[in-house]
Figure 1 (cartoon, rainbow, N blue to C red):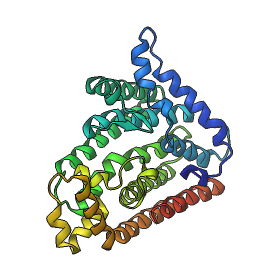
Figure 2 (tube, helix red, strand yellow):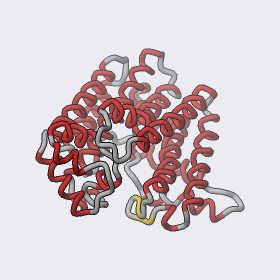
Figure 3 (tube, one colour):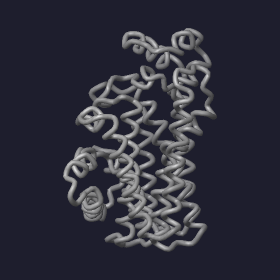
Length: 324
């Protein structure tokens, strides 16, 4: 069962295909079959579609009805295009060979093609956002800026065993939580909710994003290669020291001594074992639970549809459960 199955909202089975059709239209390039193929590469490989789902759910919560308004479908496509564009760029940064079970764009074609096609996807997101109004367009532009800030901050601390918890939180706020906050906010904006409700939806998305990234970082250390689709401890291998590692370093001088340089895979496994033996996983998951609780509280601070809010809380519970 996938994470989004916890939502159990029948209207998604009708509206997500509408988002897929909107995405397909956005990456179709008249007169340039090659760019269209590259831009659609990861789109065709699937993915959780968490961000468009959050946008749609925010619209459901605001309106209490389905099917989603066409503007909500367009908004959902916008946030997925931003996400896809960022993945093209991330895979160049990480020198990734696969993504979603298929060769990454940079591996199949080249870094240059991946960068330019990522730019194209971000541009298409901006065009669609502009069709929803200046406020949405401005929000999307600011969010792309935040994604860059968060990623650059992470790059500044590669192989830094002294990376602080504050730096980590600031990085994931930018690179992950900002787009989920925007997803929820756009769903509210196109539904015409008042400012109080709009802020509540935004807080929900932000704390959902923080929880999601922390759990993802925990799973990188605790889940098997078969589950992850990549080697366990890949973040350690790449020098990205996430929250469980930051906490583990505080109590393990041996771990601190092992970090700070590129590790071969046997050394990665040794470092991962030290993290698992510490309280790093438990403390990180405590932080994830705190963000899940704050996300749930945000839903209670609004005039949203009670049934949809209950299903979003089920999503939060399922997300935290996957961290154990």
